[in-house]
Image (cartoon, rainbow, N blue to C red):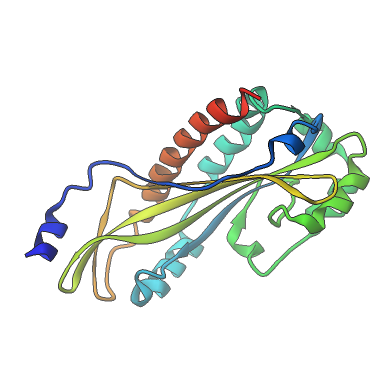
Length: 236
């Protein structure tokens, strides 16, 4: 009976998941200017909750899923919206992309996950980490911090009864800042699940709605990120 009631519960509300932030206020306040290192969106959807549909999801994500509109909006908002509220100046994008050291060193970095990432043209292809600090310091000697934004997705079980489940897409937005020493001085993950769900029966389901669900989950997560950046960062 409990399982049946669980299945019937409405999934009308956005499922926002609490997340902890790494935030060294003292070190963040020492940052005068930062450069964006990377803006990455992963097309590799985590299917840990539904291993039997992993191949279906992988093939759909690889061949048919287009998350470019999400990438374009995040890239635009980074400089036109978030830059206005960060407690430090952000290097203009034109200066970032014109920098020869950035183009020749960072934009050529790759990893095993690079084929699954989409990123703005001319940007680094790997997530921001401590190992990037030295190269970024050389490229941008007048900055003392670096910013990374990464968005990833997972197919998450929302309800189930017998062999039938309802699944939503969870978006994870990860905003990271490291200083010139490579120290992680700010890291904020925001997680949100799509309101829309799809049915999964054992190892079969229609993957087509995944793209729109990724968009919906991202919009939900970014709305929370907007609130956080205004509440926690803009006040510094």
